[in-house]
Length: 60
Length: 246
Length: 241
Image (cartoon, rainbow over all chains, first blue to last red; front, side, top):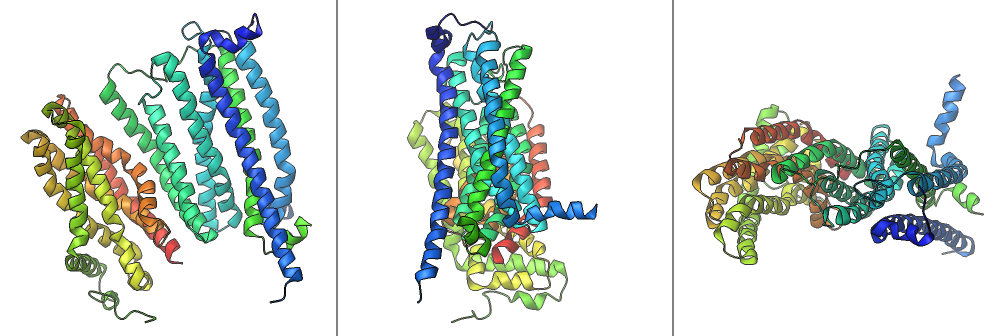
């Protein structure tokens, strides 16, 4: 499959919006998912550290 | 021999699975990236222009893979959930919970890309054809699973309740698909159908296959990473977690 | 008051030593007796059905042909929604006063009790819908034949709704956001029944036979009748742990 120019590639024969809208949303969705997992992991680790700190310093 | 089997079973404990998952997910992420690279290259630089649909058909290289994965993930999720219900293993339930968001995401992407494919090809963003409608219902099933687990505070009860729901859903998916297909043919006669895809050149099939594999590898990586989070959240009072976090 | 007194209605424990059949009947009668004391519980979903059905003509205009075409779908969706309302009652009251746990630990198989409750639910909410639907169908301009088929589909379909709904009700027992969550879980599972039920009237109007629709609905009823009580029992035990 030969594309004659970058412009042609992005235009996708007139269907550019639809093709890139699809691939773009897919990439966006996966990037978002990974970011959310990273955030979740950070929050979980922080919660554990906080509880440990409470335990270490804490006497009730 | 018996020792080897026992060795594998030790990974059923979250404590042992946590580091294993930690080593595995980067491998799957790498595999997924490589496959995605190959798949995208095939989608845009190998597969030829379609006679009827021009360049617009290239959406199938992402629409079909996410559709397949949305259904496959549901199956795997229900399997893990069922195993957790039958054998009362905590990790199985956690795996099911870890898979659900990715599956829901794939279902949503299937609908999104399907709409963007439908608009230029058949004139409307939404077509009530059997596959898209079933995909919408699958999204509802995913959301119901996630909502139920979110609403129940006790994780063990949430796992088991979700498992029953997932198993009931799995049985229902073929029934729902059949009934929607039935409904569709009754109402449309000469149907406008997204299943009437362009006649497949081999490169197109390979492209879809490789993209599907790429998303599969991605799903495994993400599920392993997410289950690690779930383990940290649920087991946070255990000693091994405190040591692992240091 | 820590432990409630004897549960409302007939004490089920005494019947545990008798045959399953008499327990079944006792539970059905108890459900009906309890519902009669709180008639609102039964009538409210019914009124809801009537109101929802009346909203559609107000929304789309009184054109007779349009309404007649919409009627099967609208009335069926109304029936689904009304079923959602009444399903919350299936286990919640007994769970609240402790009788559900009594039933679970009694000698009688919980599945039998579940079947009895589901049957009572059908009698108390499905059957009234079946009886009122023809009246609403007239509002939508359906002719006698269409009314008959619609009523028949509801008669065959509403037991299935009760059976499937039992699973959702058991899963969401005592859970936050119960009612709406119950709907979210159960409505997707109702879709096949909806499609075949509403579709039968239209198929008949188009001159295609209705036998296929009824066969499929019958098959769904059979399938659900065989499996849903077990799934509901498992879900109940999970919720009661």
